[in-house]
Image 1: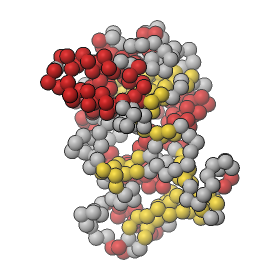
Image 2: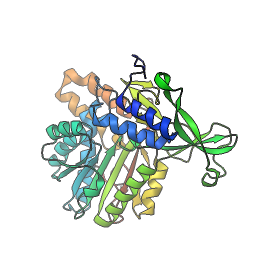
Image 3: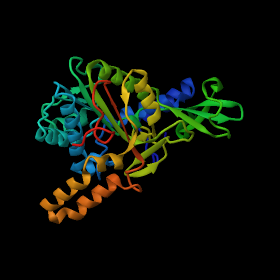
Length: 361
């Protein structure tokens, strides 16, 4: 394969081309897992110099408010010996800001970070000294309540797509167009029909797409089961929707711009919108108490971001414009405020969290 500025040859891309050429098309979920596994293992994707910016990197207010949310819930649950868990913690910024806010509220839990990237683990160790790393949720503590936070975690997990064709529902696959140096990865449809697993009232026109996220559902169910058994809560914040719905939400981000999801695998971030209704249903299946889904903007406003912004601006008047811009970016309907949703689940005997009908930090 010939490299070019627009379509660089990568080790992973070459491997995928050989894999598909030898064994046939692979499911989209397998492609996404391989691409994102490579992507996160080899770079820090965050910030101006990276590919995207997450809420904790926009302002300290985000992590501080999530920390106060956790501390308030912990206190109203009777101040148990609980652990803080973050899934996919990036540079550790959210946990660092949350730890500072929790400490002010009298809550100093051990911090557990689920992260597989060696590069990001190093950054997290600097931001959150003493945090305990885990390769997966399987090794998280089993002897205490868990307060789990997952910010922009579920959107990067592999999705499965079914496409409505003239011959019924087929799975979205990844194939090779061309051969030799001219081959490139392209979306395709599989041969097997899946009409039996699609509700009759979903879809109606050729090209309609439905998405499921088996990996996200499995992780959510496992964590919900742990929380029901051990006590605690989970807060997931991500961009997404309340399904069921049709639509292709797979996207690639590179240098803060949208890119072709099938070009340069492993060199750009692949994500898909999160179906919060599906996650909520998975939690209910394990017996967790699931609270009404909120928008990110409504949650942060309920947690007091306005008052926090005012306090920060008063302490640093020269930064007032930046603080207000961050507040708007996190909460405004035409920014992150509405597109990003928040799902909270708790153990059945724990109180409702702030922002979801519970107390106020």
